[in-house]
Length: 372
Image (cartoon, rainbow, N blue to C red; front, side, top):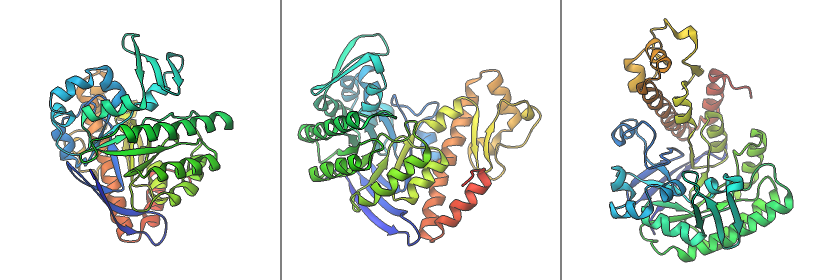
């Protein structure tokens, strides 16, 4: 098998757990937050900078890399790791979410999805088999089955048909995937906000025996309480000895809630997108650096942060960069936000080990300004 997951510790006070995910390009400590490098780059960051903030694994996007530069070019370059000069683990999503977010630009049928490129309007088709072919060419350590991401809200009948199609597509993906010694294929649980459909999706996919399982179709606009309700009944029923991946989650509160319920992996573009818009995450809440209050503030973003940005630059200077649309502003913000989340997950792992997770969560929430 391409990966090996070892469950190292389970909390006695909640569902949180510690694990170790071994891949062909290194070991990942879980629970983990994974920075997103959609187009074979984590925006504004070099691989060396990602290593300096201790990023253990990053994501890239099948849909975008298929359109440009093309999976054939990445393969010719020696695979995604060599193409982007990143020698640690990579996960590629299947492109399902991106395809299904195209709305009127795509048509779903049993064979796959016809869609128009957002770049030039050209016609394309991705089937489960094609999604695996592309990801095999890209060469990531973990690849994802092609699924239909159900929108929120959606009717029961639509969600049921969508979930059943996702299960059929997962089977086709597994049959098409032959590079099992180097790439682990994860399935994606769907079923919207309907408990019986979620549990049926899980059963169908577990019967197919994948190396890992992701939870899709959450954090798509539903209330946070509803997401937590789905995780409450779904995660405990997921295989204990395999990694559990919640897709598209990156705010501190969502990460805490997911980990508390037994999730091992999460990803989101949020910290880098916030950074490009001048929003910083700190233990005391968010800072909007463009606000005039920071014009003469010569203190760091966070006095207690050890990231490169906080050790070298003031709020006043960073605000100046953003007001002048200087690229360095976005870079410094990205370094800080990713450092913040990666180190938050490190602190979470320590808290789980020390059996003080709920205490740590409560302290963080009060300091950050979350209302429980």
